[in-house]
Length: 88
Image 1 (cartoon, one colour):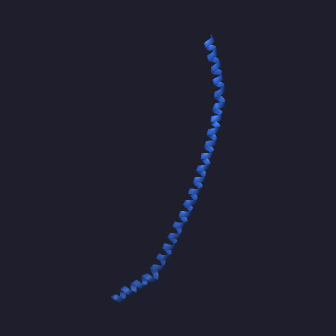
Image 2: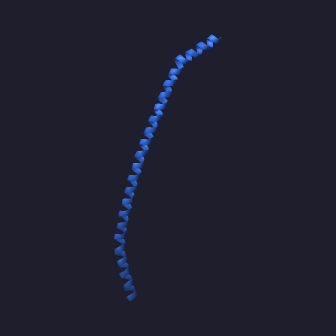
Image 3: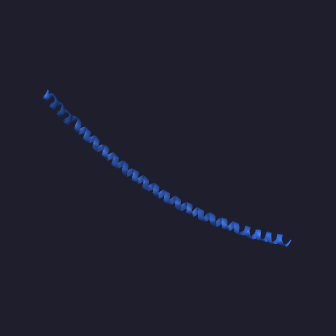
């Protein structure tokens, strides 16, 4: 019976163990590749976020300038109307 167990162990070591080691190595390589790809995607996403923040800041500044450009004449006209209303 001991010879059967020993023979079975030898078969497992000769046939199954090399395949398991190969699969383990392949799995580890895939995990490393996945980590590298994840890091690359996150780096790209961070760069995109920074670009979008800069673009939105630029748009916000342009909008503020446009609002001030349009509000100033309105304030002047309102002051004229108020002055005429007080006179009359």
